[in-house]
Amino acid sequence: MKNYFQPEIETMPLEQLQALQSERLVKQIAHVYENCPAYRKKMDEAGLKPEDIKGIDDISKLPFTTKDDLKDAYPYGYLSVPLTDVVRIQSTSGTTGKRVVAFYTQEDVDIWDECCARAIVAAGGTKEDVVHVCYGYGLFTGGPGLNGGSHMLGSMTLPMSSGNTDRQLQFMTDLGSTILCCTPSYAANLGESITERGLKDQIQLKAGIFGAEPWTEEMRHDIEDTLGIKAYDIYGLTEISGPGVSFECEEQGGMHIQEDHFYAEIINPETGEILPDGEIGELVFTSLDKKAYPLIRYRTRDLCYLTREKCSCGRTHVRMHKPMGRSDDMMVVKGVNVWPSQIEQVLFNQGYQANYQIMVDRVDNRDTIEVQVEMTPEMQKERNVSVESREKKVVAGLKSMLGIKVDVKVLQPKSIVRSEGKAVRVVDKRDLYKK
Ligand code: DLL
Image 1 (cartoon, protein in one colour):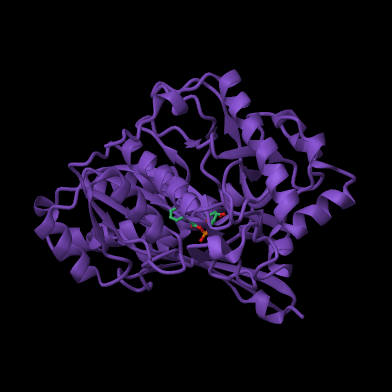
Image 2 (cartoon, rainbow, N blue to C red):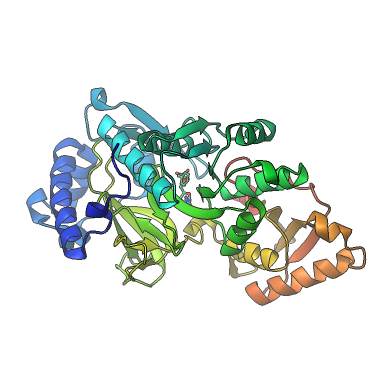
């Protein structure tokens, strides 16, 4: 059985890594120029020939690829192998318009599974573990990705998919699940059900691999306390392959990007200029060895920063900080930039949990914003604290975080619909008035 902590790759010195990346990039550019008319056109327009790309340092010569490019070329425009070599597709949810369909050869699936196997190992997983996957299966990459990684590792895999909490808990207790893979919001939801049903003594979970949506450190601590586990972040996107593009190690200090497969850059989203490590900007990825749908300098719209500071796990691959959200998650309300994650941080700091929603509207030409959040069952029992005083406290916390007045409604437990996959945190009714 192969070892999925791969020191020869994951702890490679930088110069060696750059040599590997250079070799792979040169091959990749030759591949897309030869086999993908959309890339040949882009490179011709930029006056570039494959020979101009001699190594990783030349990457900045290449044009960016955007989500609009992929949507405009739907479905086959960026396919770079004959259709007969494709064994699988996955697809985005299409929440921001037309779907993107990503294609995989068998080798591409193997690379993806390997990245997910590495992620499970980095979270302490071994062949002895029982891996409970309740990310959705189907077009969404969450279920198939972690499923593939767990298979590759040789762990017993529970392909639960999302939803049906009763069944999740039954299998979790009966079969002794030790590693939970789902969105952080569903992990919080499961934690709540475990507490309510008094099942904590019957579960054997030790770790969780949570991603697919932004979540704060505060939410991590809450999940870790409720489930009695270590909660690891995992990141990825359909266009680049799915989960496992980066993941956390035992240090939980940012996610190591699998740099032998994906080259990362951070750019200024306005100017496209490459930013140094430590500066926040838009994350851009180049697939170095995928064949069917290899994206070159793909603009993810995710905002974060990179660090090459030494990590005590020994991995040398660059770490990305938890993305605070996509640039399109940021709302401008009353003229101020508002991130859902800032609101979440205030709520957790005041003892609330993951059950909240943000309603934005425009009334009489003025923006309105209301945060609805549930009391925890413990808060409900504290009879000496009124709902009004709780609301005032959240209003004050949000005012100091955001600088604007936010209306707040503190609700009874169980008033807000629970999420089974990616949580819908924001309902922005102003979108209805567009066009
Ligand atoms: O969400 C892939 C995935 C599945 C990642 C399971 C992790 C676990 P998409 O549906 O294409 O793919 O959405 C990708 O989700 O660009 C980010 O905006 C967001 N995202 C993914 N992981 C994280 C994370 C999957 N750990 C988009 N933290 C990305 C914050 C994340 N945002």
